[in-house]
Length: 390
Ligand code: FES
Ligand SMILES: [Fe+2]
Image 1 (cartoon, rainbow, N blue to C red):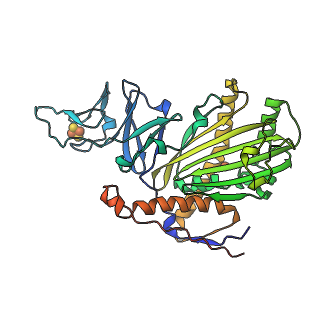
Image 2: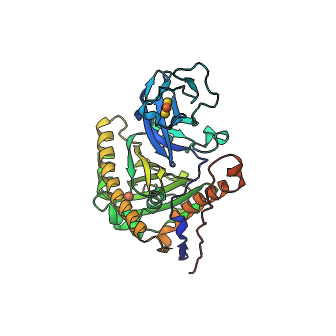
Image 3: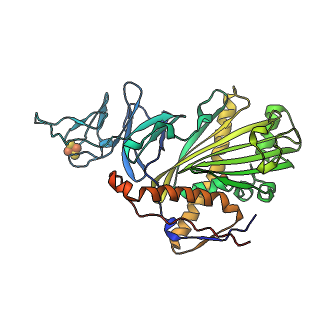
């Protein structure tokens, strides 16, 4: 593989995200008949579940004097502002003003397109006319009878793209997660990075290795197998911020590795003697320096074992805590040295493609299109230059 020698411009390190995209705003269970405030892509919103079970998302600022509506109260499907009592319906239109009968026709707050899918509540912070529900990233493993699992939301004090970088290069498992999923073979095995218009994929197969502690336990518990394994990690990125990782191990030599290895067709992989999981991640920018990181781990074995679901969720949470410490320390170090230039290595190929795709979406919005549609225009982020030198 050519050594990629790349410097990325510093303004790509500032927080930057497209607005015309679906972003996970909450886990479904978080949203009940109660006001839930959250900042999504630097926009303050308030969410609540309506009496018909669907979710409403409004701008969290009263039209009258900007008091956050989340400080008011919800009655049925209507929100009463906690300052002077203006009432808004679930579409954001004012339905009552104290001491006057005529309602000012401009009295409304913004309401956001919302879709509930794969156990997440997704909102579209950009141009509502472009909010096509078919564009919600595929995370079906989180809500599928053939898979079992659960996850959590953590708020991480870093640019969301640092989390994407982290997930696109699993070499870090060797050094950050040595007691669970990390092993030398991950850092040493070759991988292949490919990309499409909105997606990037990193494929890595490890042939006939000792399973790391986590996977050794899973295949033993599920299939009673102890011995060498073939291991895989296939990382699927979908712009701007969703990363689903197909992971697992199978008894060595039973056909899990497709002909052609990293360049082979995963559909030809026989995993019948193995255990398969999906690490599901979608990372929503909160501010320039913080993000809501929604993750879940779904498995296709021991589906009825609720105790395993609980143990896996807590175990994976511990692993992700190791990442959180690294990512927040990295963000602090970057904030202290805002002019530092970064070089990319071979291992950064996946994250470079992810960032290119993100930058492409941002650049598209910062042309006249964004301004014309009234979407907050922002300066174009520089595309990361890539130069192969060896
Ligand atoms: S600020 Fe909400 S009613 Fe006055
Ligand atoms: Fe990690």
